[in-house]
Amino acid sequence: MKTINVDLGDRSYPIIIGRGLMNGNFDLADYVDGPDCLVVSNETVAPLYLDKLRQNLAGRNVASISLADGEAFKTLATMQTILDALVASGANRDTTVIALGGGVVGDIAGFAAACYMRGVAFIQVPTTLLAQVDSSVGGKTGVNHEKGKNLVGAFHQPRAVLIDTDTLNTLPLREFRAGLAEVIKHGAICDAAFFAWLESNMAALLGKDPEALAYAIQRSCEIKATVVAEDERETGRRAILNFGHTFGHAIERCLGYGEWLHGEAVAAGMLMAAALSGIDAADQSRLKNLIAAAGLPTEPPLIARERWLEAMGLDKKVQQKKLRFVLLRSLGEACVSTDYDRDRLQALTGTGA
Image 1 (spheres, rainbow, N blue to C red):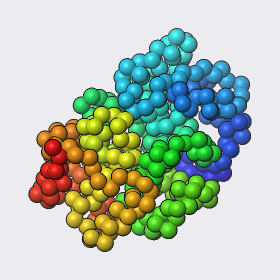
Image 2 (image 1 turned 60 degrees about the horizontal axis):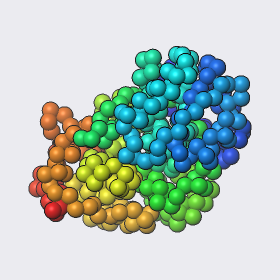
Image 3 (image 1 turned 135 degrees about the vertical axis):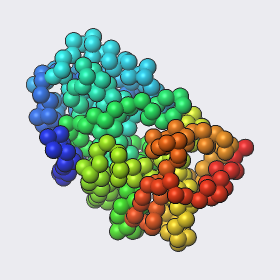
Image 4 (image 1 turned 60 degrees about the vertical axis):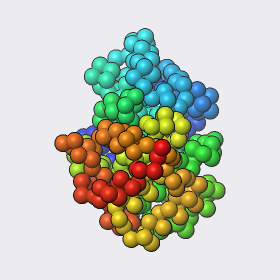
């Protein structure tokens, strides 16, 4: 078992990573202040892991709600069902909301916890690779709006993040590959040595080698924890964690949420952002080859330029009506800038019909 601390002063919390942590093998009740908790899961994950998680909550009253599965259900209407469940159960301010599932479940449950009685505690128990290496860490919660991804939400840090890597054994291959996009992202923006390690170990990761997986998850969490500790509310450096996301979120919105998985859209988006950055051709090739090795898209779908620009115009990094992109200076070093080649952006978004 490995513990990584997210250093946020009196709101610091641990990320606990290990195998077989459910089935009562980790005392999650230590992070539940009151007698009651509500586990929010979905119809795919709950049958697999809800009963196992209950064993980690000895002495607590555990209620649960199971949501429909998929990005298409990441809406205010779905969040309302969680709020209704909290009210129906008589939940108080000492109730803890526990998110058991992937990024959609974590984001919605966290947002409901942020809103209920102006904020109750919550815990993340991510069961997908993407959630384990990215969305469960950092306190971003929210839902999608029909006009854009994650436009409605709040920063609300969890009390703890419990990552049982054995849950990846039941994760479909497509979703596992999608999670690798966020792993690759961490190397591309912050750690050239980690990026090189991924190039050498992608086959092991795809084979779910336990040691390779443990290191990839640990290093991704370390990188994100460091960046979040420096800039919790994304007023500066934290925005680099959105490398590829301006294009990726536009893909998700334009195609319809769920048509491409988040990680698939981010993979194509990273290559578009790298091209916009104008980095060395060899570095662009390395990024493309690693994304291809992970079995992820290397080309964006056909989207009309006007739709690209409309969707990106609602990106949360936009300031004073100006698009800002996360760009690479080189592999392992990213920045946020409005200084990009407009003609190159036109060319990148100009092939759609």
